Length: 270
Image (cartoon, rainbow, N blue to C red; front, side, top):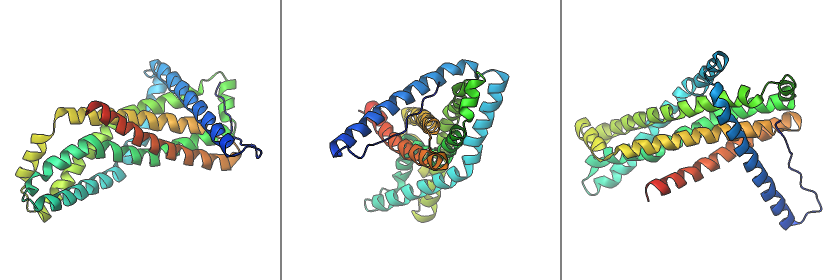
């Protein structure tokens, strides 16, 4: 049974009481999100059934293929900005030929996973939270439970599996597009040859940078899915609650992506 507990702050509470109450609600929400993640992971054993495969493929199309356009544009211009800003500084020391290494490492380690996760949180996560919130306030979730259909297996597990697969794939694609965009700026504005650009890009980038970026992407995909589904299941107060749940899902996902990205970088590049 999926429980929902609206936040309520009695007017009689003072400032300290409100802070304590909000911290208590935050801890409860984190615990419920953790339980939701555990239940969704446990339901992955049903991912190879015919119905689950169809739903997972559909979610992969929604979260991956339909996001390619915006990810392409953002990744290319991110690489162009990195290349231009780094190249202008390196030109002062006559080292603009090394911009390939800076762009490649930045895209693989940080900018590729980070930009992809933010785009997916804004596009896919918000839609996911709004969809589940609408089902919650219209009592469709309760109807599924009355029919002995597990909402976690039916709604959360396919989305979790799809995001766990597509987020690393899109991150790798975004990193490649960012490197190509940086090379375009290097050739046209910084007078760096394509061969020199890609030689330095592949020379200084390590395989570990790729693995760390893909690990971050996997973690970000899980965060986006669980935060969005948890916010959707916790929606109350009709249409107003749907908007509030969507906004809360996007903001929480953004903050957790930043925190998780820093923690992973700190642990793996100590």
